[in-house]
Length: 352
Image 1 (cartoon, rainbow, N blue to C red):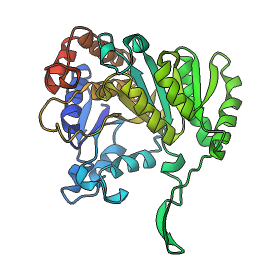
Image 2: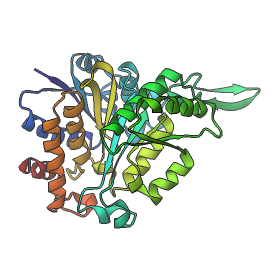
Image 3: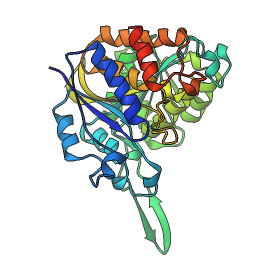
Image 4: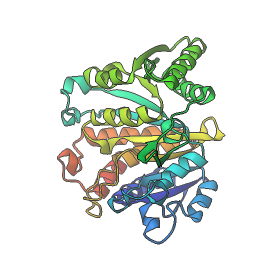
């Protein structure tokens, strides 16, 4: 029996994650879903952000359905004492190097975007972000006093094999879509980006059916709001991907609609171990009110079926049901509607 670890997290995390888990159980009653506490919820119980039982559950599971972690009370703490450390450890220890973030505008939501509806109508792109390298993981990473002056150091490091594996992930994804890949870097300034561009360019002959182009990250940020419909798959390094994927999310009008998959080396092609989560934060201001949009968590569950359980049919069932729900007027509060978190999830279930 396939097993999924469910980590609801903090803020609205438990509300949207449990709505998604209910839907996941609806389409796959054979799944064993087991919940554990991580993040701020664990810290408040005197436990580490990623307790031993949560790590053991991850080891024994085929995938992780993750909520959101982070609470304002911990913002000034060192990373190891913050809720986000749970996510950092899971990404590092399971080598979840490929973060896949689909960005779609559902029919009926074009007017929710801050851009003109014609610019985002039918928008369908994917950001592939390298997740375990770059400036977030490079060492040294520290604050210190040197010659009486306070200073801080973050180190950006990339190795050719790290770049190659994320680029191949993106090429393969583009091959199954519209066959266009945009690689984003800052090669006019950064040595890591010069290496990035050389490695990606050298792989292009292995994928003659995919059109490859390169953009500097500042230009990419501009083009995403100027001509978003021209993009198919975007691949980039960790920090650039963090920023650009959030920018791309806003094109849809609500960050609450966008899922993500973080895939690693564990498992086999078609059944990769992965962590699946909405890209929005914990929204503590609305936590407990039952009004958070569960779409991103529901769609993350669909990605879990696709990548970790090799269940394309049920993944498409969920995605189609979400699209139909929006097309037929289902909305939560941040999109001008009145449906609760659970009511929206039920609206999706009704359209499976």
